[in-house]
Image (cartoon, rainbow, N blue to C red; front, side, top):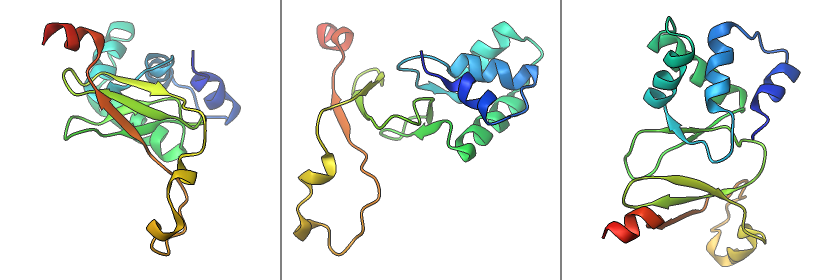
Length: 139
């Protein structure tokens, strides 16, 4: 499981029932839910939660740096609570499933100095694309 709830408590983030439910829905490994999926799951736990509250809470979590927005191939943004451990994403080109991957090595080292064009590179985002086992067998 991710440590999202612990991180938020450590920051002193005001944990209302609505915020807690959104954080609980996002907590876990390989979680990459859309805002609508967060809303759907949060509503099961707290039926009175509103769409605006979910969207506002997601925005706050992104602004705090506790959740990462992931956008792939024009699909809906997804929210990743694995914000404090460097990782890349493996994306299924069929169903859009996303998994966190932690390859060994430094991806920045793979970028030759001549290909940096004078940029001071701060971060690297790598996305691996392919088909998940379900989509591969369905094809």
